Amino acid sequence: MSRKKRFTVIFALILCTAIAAVTVPLSSSSHGQAAAAPEDQLPVRLNDTLTDSMSAFDSLEGMDYMIEKYLGQWEIKGASLAVMRNDSLVYAKGYGYADEENAVKMTPGHILRMASVSKLITATGIMVLKEKGLLSLQDTVFGENGILNDSLYTAAIREKSKFGITVEHLLRHKGGFTNGRGDPMFSIQDIIRQFRLDGPPDHETLVRCVLTRPLGYRPGEWQRYSNFGYLLLSMIIEKVSGTDYETFIQENVLKPAGCFDMHLAGNYYEDRLPNETRYYMHAGSPLCEEYNLSGRMVERCYGGNDIHGLSGAGAWCGSPAELCRFVASIDGKPEVTDIISPESVAEMTEYFDPETYSLGWNDTKPTGEWTRTGTLGGTSALVKYYPDGECWIMITNTSTWKGPGFTKYTEGLFRKCREKYSAALPDQDLFGL
Image (cartoon, rainbow, N blue to C red; front, side, top):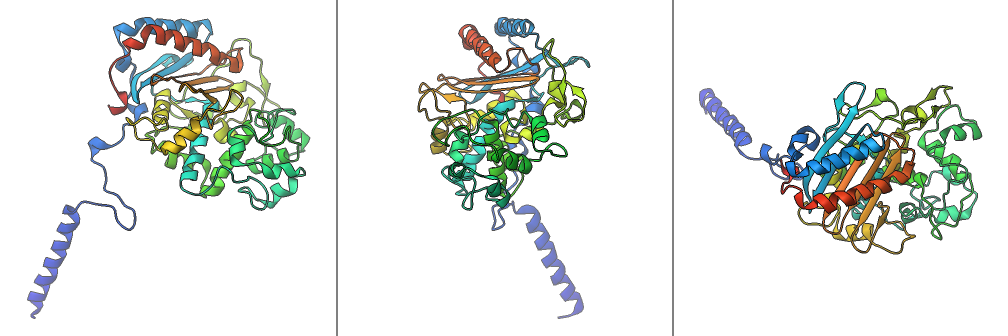
């Protein structure tokens, strides 16, 4: 073959290869690469899309007035409300100010600290790992055969009963941990002093310190709400998955659920995320000692506690609208595809008795009513899922003197709003904008 003909053949082969690369669509392969979704099928990024005008209806002006009156009564600077019905987001609106000093109005796209609502996300992460076959709820946590089998933890344990703590015990607040010497997650100053630390402990140091303390009861035989137990669950997720907690949850729980703007919150105003609200303490709230024993006196919502260090026990930050999307992904309804199996949904919402915590939820009644609450300095959050398929979520950016008890009043507000305005909620689905 002449040089000219050889060049022509080679050029033709290159041209065909190039054309094939352009025209053949991507598909699943042995490397797990899937075809890119068409632009009109990409998931909606709710916080970038939602506006108050999408939920502005004359028929709901009375409800707006009730909510604004409620916020005024409790001197709350701002709040965000989202309502879902049968896995459709029918309402999402901001009230008051996200940042009063800078005259920034609250919108449905603002994100707020959700406090212990974070536990529902962490529990779901555990169920995802369970479905992957990477752990069992009956796996023990400490000891040679435990998940957190670090010898430093084992050496800190003096009570053999601690070796019987299981993953399920932690999920149900039955791990034996009590707050007799203060909640470890909210008494960092005392821990620094007691154990003569140079500064705030990292998670590993905190666990070693707490494990030297006696349990309040034998694991599994009683229950006591434990933020520390959910920190341990966060660390279990890291150990089993081989990645940091926040990344695992975002990639394996939140993004599959259609939630793209949830993050672990920072401790200070300067640490806030771009669309995060400002937080406020209630009138008359005194300054407190900074959590790191710097000697400074600070607002409790900005430096009084190590918020970021709460991890899966209470550090998540997000919007009520995206929280609705998350709940839609773990509720067993068909309209939005769940990220966990029907068996896992049933396990998380199974009712035993009034004294037994559900998995991640505060409680799940036999009627199908599920509740998840959260409170921090500067924040109050309530997720209320009703048997008729409605889910109401409100998060505020201001504390009240009632503390955790404030959510009972918000439940009452939801009840009144539902009685008067449930039928007037629009027939729309803001998830699909």
